[in-house]
Length: 450
Ligand code: NDP
Ligand code: 2IT
Image 1: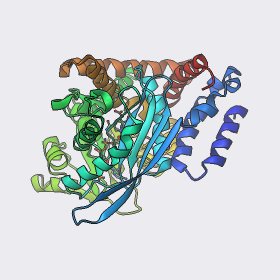
Image 2 (image 1 turned 120 degrees about the vertical axis):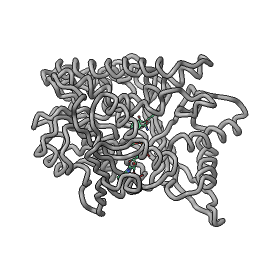
Image 3 (image 1 turned 45 degrees about the vertical axis):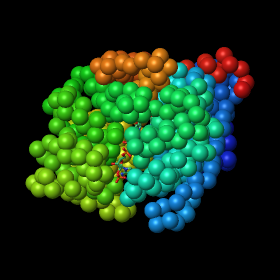
Image 4 (image 1 turned 30 degrees about the vertical axis):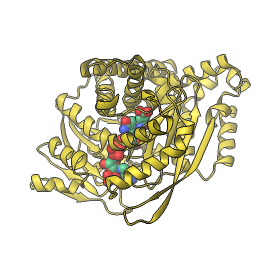
């Protein structure tokens, strides 16, 4: 291993040894950019890696709120403002009980590279809370969001840091957060949050963007290897924002989606998933995917048992789209997918595939689209939302979608060119990391030691 890369990984391990997700994300990136680090001592001389892995600022705060029973609950809030090299800090907010500093830092670190790949002027950040919106009333969610924003507002701004949604944060939460921000600031700063509803400054196509973008990237990757989406069987983990719109686009591209899941279990419908039914369960009723059986009793429901691997990866498929959460696709799952003849895996979620599973898939010549490239359509469309807010003007759905499509094609081409440049044709993990790193390193050198 390159001695500089090795030294920086050692520093991180020593400092943050108790942050496994963060170290996992660092490991993947630093190891795959080694061929670039080997070409020049300018990276070490400028302390590029030491500076890149350390967040510019980490904010942690108390979020007290009162539940419907009148009890006081205290959650923990986070915002990791990782890197502002090429634009205001930008990245989602996650509300999920599993949120901790390691998860926030891995997501923030990934976001720097993803945002650089979009070609748009956005830096990297992530935030959130260990608050669990599941089972909470709208009023509880509102009170929590208001309390969260009462601290967060002083750290964000449309030219400073622009949060958006992620797991557990969708249109409802963004609305409550925006309302409280506007009330505290007494000014209409439309671009301070993205993922807003269309009725008060949101962008058409933002809701669909991550899933659609994933399918555009996948289509480009397949077509480069003489394959198409049309006619393929697809399984998609999750049934949230990313999964639903990946499903919608996959079907419109001529694929058949046969399985989706949530954290309790998996639905297998060999006739093809009825997405209207999933949307009604998840977007309207906020229910469990098992309820799919009420309208489609012929479908199969496979329960997720605690500690077991995810049942969805045992279903035979041509294309697997992990769109739920980190480390949901393990080496054991990868082996089953390969055995069952999978041809491509494209990551809609952030870091859903473990490092050993990724390696296994690549070694078996499975086309692999890494998250920071393949799911960049969401944040790219957030940047398009920001630009519309600045212009005080709106694009049509078709205009935003065609910009998104162009961006995803550009990202694929950048990943391909970078993987070719190190003689690793088809290694889009290395391609994505290198394409983003080159841009970031150049900007860091240009801006001096800050
Ligand atoms: P949602 O909250 O809308 O949906 C998350 C889905 O994943 C739900 O079906 C949820 O099931 C499932 N899930 C979450 N955690 C777990 C878990 N621990 N085990 C099993 N299933 C789980 O989130 P999004 O769709 O927005 O986000 C999904 C992924 O995509 C995340 O990794 C996110 O970081 C990433 N992403 C999101 C973007 C966006 O624009 N929203 C952009 C780029 C990436 P359940 O309801 O049972 O918890
Ligand atoms: O992981 C991600 O890229 C997101 N959750 C979207 C972030 C954004 O700012 O739109």
